Amino acid sequence: MASKTALRLTVPAAALALVLSACSGSAPSDDATQADLETAAAAADPEDTIEAREDNFKAIAKSMKAVKGQLDSDSPDFAVISENAAEMAANAKKVPDFFPAGTGPDSGEDTEALATIWERPEEFQAAAAKLITATDNLNTAAGAQDLAAVKTAFGEAGMACKGCHDEFRMKKKD
Image (cartoon, rainbow, N blue to C red; front, top):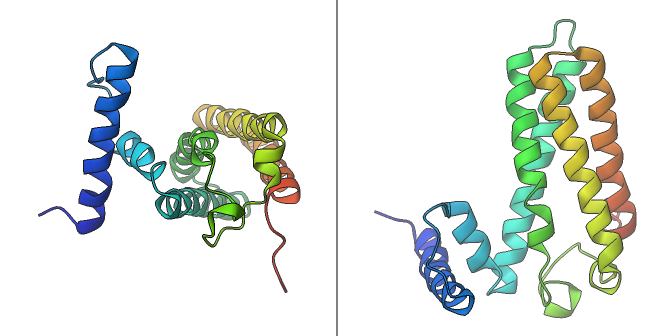
């Protein structure tokens, strides 16, 4: 039996897909994944969108931690690095879509996203593009099992994360 959350997300997503397809004059794509449907549904509700993007960022952080653990080990396991680099790359590609209008501080929901995301959208999109490029490079290096390239790309991914955190995320209180 489907969970309440899955149903809550899937039904509006399906409706949204139908509405969007009607607007575009084409049928809904059979290529739409459950994640795509959930992302579309989340955009309809600020709380759901914020929760989905936080989950996405937590997944990126978890994968980064796993890669870092391997890079810090005496004999890195490229299977672990590759799996997590692929996850990071896939999740990074979702970032730009998790910030629709109405999901920032003005939504009244609890979010660490700063209003600057919506005030300076070109800068935010450029920062998200850096993350996507960096994680794609990490994924490529991991697939090639090139330790030096993985270390370089991992550093670039970390800097891309930091760049967004510095500009677009509320500072953590100590």
